[in-house]
Length: 516
Image 1: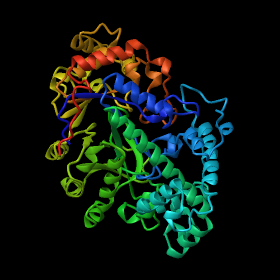
Image 2: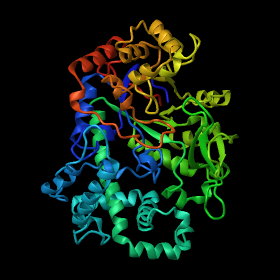
Image 3: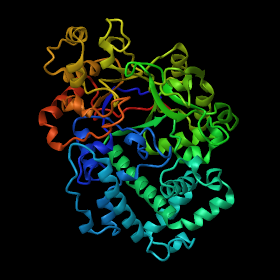
Image 4: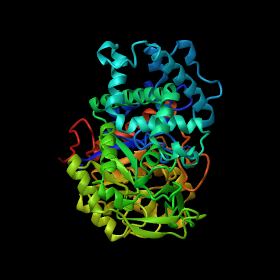
């Protein structure tokens, strides 16, 4: 993917939007955010993975690489369809506007989604097999189920069984279900037909609402950058339905898991716990699962950032019983074979390579072979000297520059905890007195050679470290941040707009091109 025009955008996950039901969603505030992006001359809206959240409420540990987070569904839109009643949409009195209370908002939303599904399926014509006999909504649902059946059927059954089994890991389910015995699966599909339909209904609502929002964004000159984690969660429909593609033992348990060695964020490394791929098996299938995954992602997004890109060159293999990530080893990944297969199947790849961490020559070679832009993070640049790779005067056009990512502190938070050496260097390099450090950092990357710059929303509105999105290695309190419209002043918008224009990144003059 080669972004050939200078452009800029904002990093904000939809859950961080304002809204009345405990967390941001695809409702009116999402459309208002698109309007704000367009008014500030922004070209990109970058989001985190849109799948179901997993342990620790992380969107990087989803129960499906294909399914969407149904808690993002706009409940008011369901009411407009007649599937919810207006009086059912009263917000919970304990919802907070500045943080997400996941244990509180999930049951609230799930109850309303179940009510909507029951009303939807009350149509007596649904399920009789003749789409032409159904009304438009029922026909659209039936068509969606048919079109997405390759992943949707397994997903819906997995989610049903997952809730039925009290969240026991799938290898501890009854043997017939754990090993996917065809007779056991058919029986489960019959017994749990209503629950399975509920999950399919929710995925249909998610997809149609998201695609409507994406079309709205595109029509306003805003393009969506999605996020594809390299690994998937063990407790997922993907691993349960395709165990042969993952490093599991005969009992279905991981033999090795993913993570990274000691790094900037942790002196014991990061133990993610995702099962590793059997890349030899993927190779034998022509990388069919990865092709399907990326094809699906590119329906949802205009571009995708692949998290932990270096894992395709080589990945950190950790024994599944290890307590930390320290005692792992580097193992070769699929390298160019995977991307050759993706290129052959999908055409040019609108991919941003998240090439952070310990980057070796093989990672650079793989990234550059397919002309993929890497990432530059300004917060990492001030610990050494003027030779640091992440200082803006070293940026190249085919790169994506950030003040920080979702894993970083806010720029104000970084500044407040920076060492005296980092502060002195940053002030000198940026020409800053430190009073508006976030804007000095934004200006620096906007004026760089990088074609694309992305700024976390927290930096635009100048928030301190308690508003960061994620703290790697910290088990709780992550992914909860939300903003309010009152946080955005006219000054913020004007500063961003003027900086975008003066650096030649304004969206209205020309639409960024994705090379084909």
